[in-house]
Image (cartoon, rainbow, N blue to C red; front, side):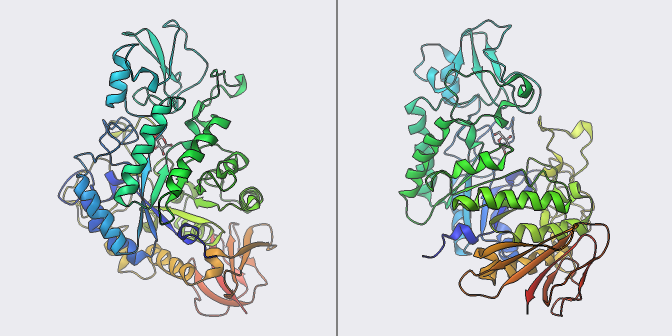
Length: 509
Ligand code: GLC
């Protein structure tokens, strides 16, 4: 049986606001993404995940949706979406849209109606509780700031639940009408031809009956990092059955923001829940070989161990970019060998191929209530003052060194990190062992993470070694260097030493 496309795919996340505008503008749009698809084909990724582009008051920059079945005029319209989807498919790129099922915007007509009166037919589409204005119904905390996950609605005299901002009321998935409405949203995009969904905080949609308090020692954490209940699994199985009823291996890639790989693994179900899930503990792991070996071992034991398929991600629109976290371009280059070399599907974040760091955002330019502006800085396309945007002052400041770290300049320099991304993506594409093969950890000393990939339809083996230590490491590995993080010695026999913060892909003899 051939593996479904998403097992060997490399995903690339586009944050529409920050990717590229099609006309001079401070924010990007769908036509701008379409105009730059050749960059993605040249790079060699397989699938694009688009963060939300739906109509939204932008309280959470699109994750507060006020219409699930349209495009915000700032980004274009449905015709522009269809054109983008067609242009992706012409290039053999798959396209995932972001489904935000846990909450809508407070301006969504559903919530506007629900809030209008206790008797409104939509009232029960959200989660309301009685009480008094001075005491929330339980101790759950919202994400982003230390405030309760409840807001008192004065007009109707009840609290409503929001695991995120007050402008993002949680939908009530215990109401079958909500389930049906969200299934309709999924059908809307599947019928248009999307290849699947990245599903926002999917683990949040079911709630423990009775909404019990979080344990007192955890109660300062956002409830969204703790919400983990059997009901959600049932709801995911319903979504999965719907997605599987469509032809073409449509995909559900869920965001399970629970910081335990053991818990994340349960959201794959028995092959009847998520096809793929994000697993964030590795993203929060420092640049230390012992820590990484432990994360990799956990992932293999808990995810591969149940016959499921892992994902690997180091940067996204919610976290400081790994180039900034790890502190050097050498480390960012070496980290790519983890992403593309480990067993699972990698998810790259636009701009990491340029080695972008987070932008420095002065206090008067801060716009995100969650403090995530730095990683959302606009992608620089050229060295010119407008970096290809037609304006010099986009919605967020440029990331550091845009006059050097831009697509035009780095494409002209074959020693750049951008070319390293391209070479390693090509080496992965050419190797069934790297894409689909088995995994075996190698013992390569305390500071080195090294592993072998074998099989994947009879191809040659591959070995990957990443030196996270401060000094050169002697490694007894014999073979040809296919790709080196610093470009040194590619095509030659491995010299037996790997420099600090360096990585290699080797074809063993
Ligand atoms: C997810 C998104 C994040 C958003 C939150 C609420 O974690 O990735 O950007 O703020 O959900 O929708």
